[in-house]
Image (cartoon, rainbow, N blue to C red; front, side):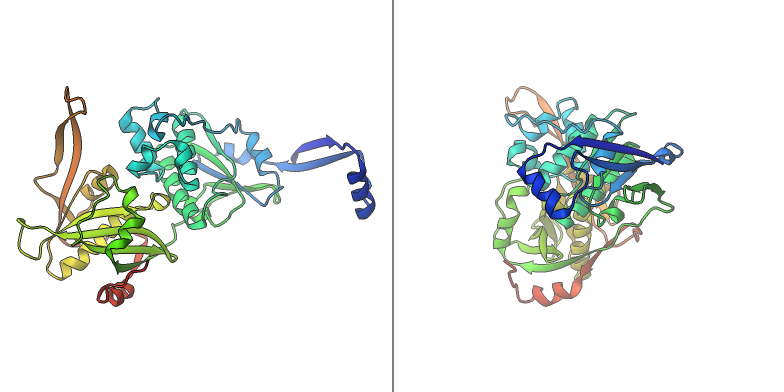
Length: 379
């Protein structure tokens, strides 16, 4: 067994003398830490995600440094967040941020300093992941230590999907074990055990149970700053809020769609998933669930979005067919001198045509039935 040993000479004074006497410390000249290092096995198989885990003081950071540089991402707060990704094209930058679960368009336009802790953490992850070349190993210390545990799960799921999709390699150091099922690492290493443990089977992501409530218009105030369109919402909208572990995480609003179909035709006007909970694929699941409820009551449901993540997801979903508005829309830029194109995704719901076995989100329908009739506001 190999070890990393760190020694440091003690500078003695009255405080150290008190510790020696009170706790009968024999070695009064130096302090040392001995950490077992045994990563040879991870060089014998292909992998994408490794996790070094253990409590504080067990040597996780020291071991992580054995793989390379732990330097942090550096952001220019004179620029919008997305402008800091200037080695990528604008389209590539938006895709990278979205893939890390940071798909809120207003967030992209804010400087790094004005983001929440969770948003800053995702932005830093996106920066380090995006900067990594093909043969690099991405190193992340104190993974998810500064964020809410449900946020940590969402962040872990978004990260692992991107890493595997692009066949990158990343090693994360964390004192939290609750993220393992969401990261599904290929190997883990505990300094206390002193050995690498290879995952025999890929973990299946745990099921997420959401509660859905009919809510008052005022609930929109919690979500409006995160929508890419106007913060205005038609006062006649039927509004729904979705909760995960009693936390509001998403909002959806529905309006009549005059001129299309009959009086029961509806369209989804707003869909917002809070930034901390993006990356779980909730948008498509929520839209499908609500549309199915209305479809059972003989309502036709339409949606038009310019959010590429949701638009692309619905293109692949057999519950939806595209409509005439599904196209790239020519627009003039702000100077009026040139024509640019913007994607517009338009769909009609046609009912459940497939059973997607990858869906791991369930809904508390009883909450919907109980509250929808009373229009109770949760906030």
